[in-house]
Image (cartoon, rainbow, N blue to C red; front, side, top):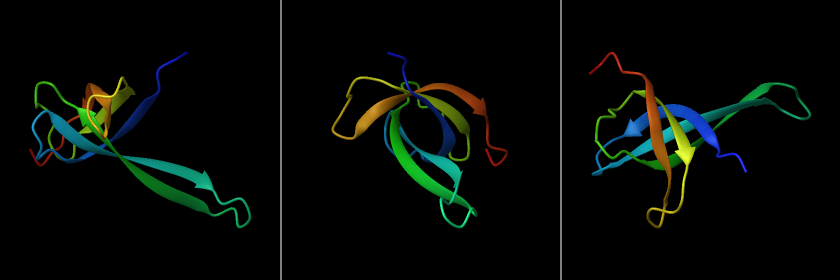
Length: 83
């Protein structure tokens, strides 16, 4: 089975070794055909604490690391200009 991957933006880095990543899903509405965007937030493990708010990251699914954490940061794609 292939591991799931998502690309999103870091919205919180206040926890130790954990970041919150917002992943946006865009799709056409089934009836009205307007593009709808839904955002889901994932807690991801960041072992080195190098992700900052605004960074674009790729996360991969892993075994449960805590009650809510099931993802790890695979790589930082773009760093935030604010940092």
